[in-house]
Image 1 (cartoon, rainbow, N blue to C red):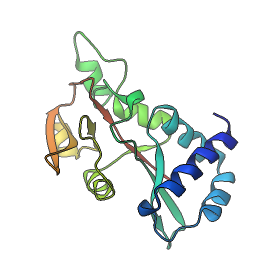
Image 2: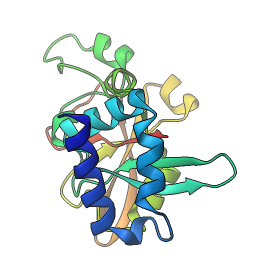
Image 3: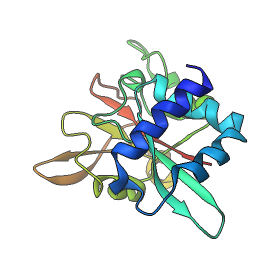
Image 4: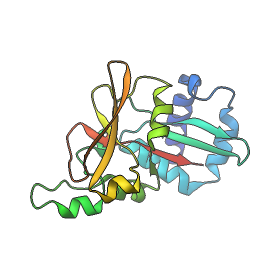
Length: 178
């Protein structure tokens, strides 16, 4: 998608979902985006893989806008992946094509943390049919596990699984600082 088309899509989403970023002005954000082509590329990757990125936080102190994937369900272009490269390499058969950590790094984004995921859920109902890997604490990962979240029964749940597991309905959500 061209930068002009991407900016148009981001602006339309920004204007449609003002509850996610009360008090922010599109013109200021657009000016910042237009001077950060590397960040625009990452936003395009988020968009291309179905993440529907939108601004959810603005840090006045550092003048940083933070985008999260705001698609209703875990982004379709990032599903059926295990947690990280170590998990991928540990699988003997039926390996997924990729892993969440490497995909996020290649896109220039970070996996949401559990805290960020919970903040996102305050803005709407996300992952009611899917689930999303979230950044896993090192002590859990060291023991072979990884964590993921979803929303069921109007409640956000955090679960664990072996990091090598993958499912068609589990992907990952990312964040990007601009």
